[in-house]
Length: 296
Image 1 (cartoon, helix red, strand yellow):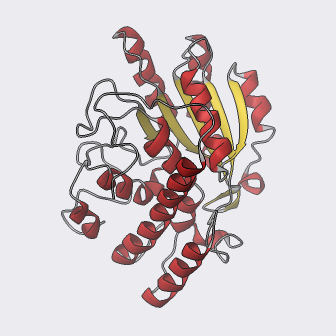
Image 2: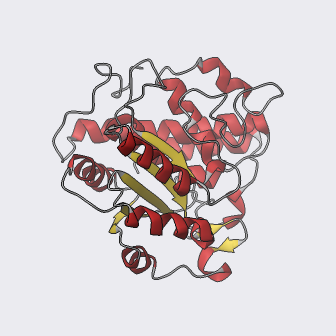
């Protein structure tokens, strides 16, 4: 299947702010693809982060298939938009997209986490074409994204840097150090997206350490802040298109994406234990049927 991102090489998307019904349908299909491939690949690994991917599937689809400027064949094109993921344990949801875009052989997906495979539980930018940041310890992505955006300014590049953060990651001090610096240097090409699904490994985020009022905190650090339903493809795509097209903005941007952890599989949506787990093949097949039956 040819993806919408495969357009003229080295060009940014050219479309109006409001996505058409056919564009939304395509993004919905790609988000479903992310969920289904996540199920399949975790079955290979025998353990993985289902619910962390499912809360972010629409965000992944919108960024990679609609909003970001990417090269048709060259994942290292210098003028591409960058994507960094603080919640790197959700990489299993990004690998299928990169293969779908043609950045590496789709056969590699079948080796996920196997000995010698380039595709690990967390992404490695030295091994996986299309990965801009090697994640691991939570909290480092925004600082690295800030560095990339500063480098772009120094080199007179015009690319955007998108950084996805988990809401549990808001408890990391380094995130807020980066937030201070980004405002100080007026890094308008830096867009942070907080996947506000409400859960982290140990339980509810705000039970472990409350991060609210999250929007007011980002504004206090000098960022422009927007809140959006992270599963509403029309609202999400419209907002990201608008922000990407805004050349007058002077401040960095934080998008708080309200999401549901495990979105698409009903019992995962109500059980934080699926942050890390395993479905046997029969249960995985039933979960796949549920995902296919829903219009998210």
